[in-house]
Length: 321
Image 1: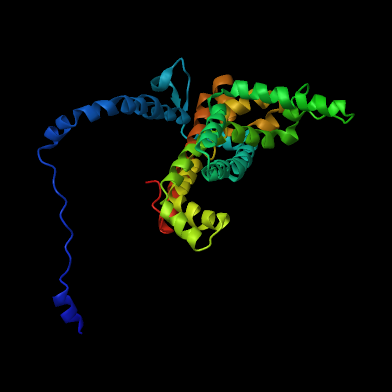
Image 2 (image 1 turned 30 degrees about the vertical axis):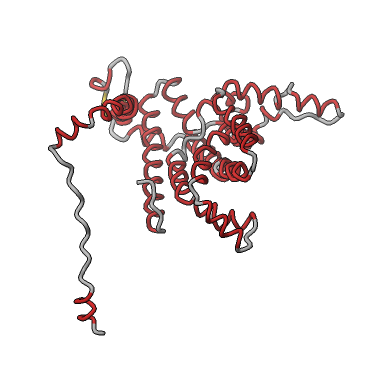
């Protein structure tokens, strides 16, 4: 059969035109006014607390003084950026931030995935709900309380130190040891937020068709094969989305958590970009330099998110936007 015959017998399928909503835009908005009213508080929140503060980034190009305001402060162009790049503390802060972020992506990001998979394999719903309730709790505890608890366990006069001393071994104050600091920060993040972050991954697992598991079991697939060939592919979209969102915070490694423990190990070990901005801006009063550092951090994070999203789309996934 020739191509022409095929074309005659199979006319081109035309896409069904999308039905146009009835009424004008104003009419449709009035019809959905309840929904718009429900959106209004959230919209105001983002406008007031997320978009309006963006205007303050002009301080990065000024010798900003809170007493003069944006209109009367002197414009200095890129002088703040030049001073910032010559500051050795910025290099230290950037290095510590990258190392902490790498540790959190490698260890803290997979932790809720593993916990969600383990919880999903628990047969008893009662035990599963009890474990979920327990692991969610640390998320609601403030960093002040979390660090106080860890101090009581691992501090110089903590439980672990006293147990080691009682057995005649030289004790180690882990909380104030610079060599342990980055591992300690990562462990605290895992302890506090792993349970809470499992909510999203558990929701993704529940969307996987149970017939896929039954078919895999009929074909002789064991627990690990079902995990590898059914569970993880079923979670792929959510995993990619969460990883892209994590890259947006790749230079945010926990301001409050680190600031509360910085004095025990020193700035050389605990200075990160967030504390650098705080120290230079709020404490030191160099608002222009602090804003330049914060602006640079935001530009890098945005670039990473856009680049990762494009890369993911090229590999065939949906991406975040």
